[in-house]
Length: 211
Image (tube, rainbow, N blue to C red; front, side):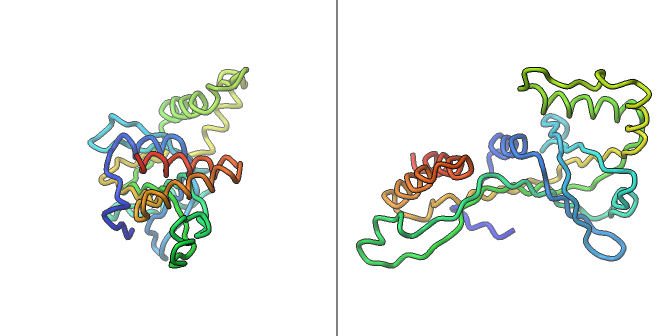
């Protein structure tokens, strides 16, 4: 990933926070016939290894679990806030007109060599943690124990666990840092004025980088 220095984010806490808030990843790995791409929600085990460990699962019917490379790193891409930026939001555009559109985004790339896990107890613990993570804010959270035991056993038999110890993390926060402060303020105000959650999320990142 091309990362100019002014867009680079290296704080592990910040990178981990994006992974947790945007867990649906694009997982890219090498296979015998080329690259394999899947979209997998991963849980982050922050204290497992120097950079953390990603854990997820795929359908047993998905050939990726027995065809990915065990010698070359996969890359797992977590896409955070992103939004189109209009040059009309820059005060400097009114002064000299030297402005063009761009796209702001925050993204994390996690690299690591995956392994498969078929142990039923591990899988049960994994889907329990995954459910608890995403059900915790609901008024009536669903639990694995809500379903019949034999049904869950059948469902567990249809998946394979994936664990990726993270060897390296790369973060890119392209949030208008290359613009003068008045332009950054203009971008944040323009995004907020759009009124949608995605734009507001990016506006917050622009504000944070402008302090």
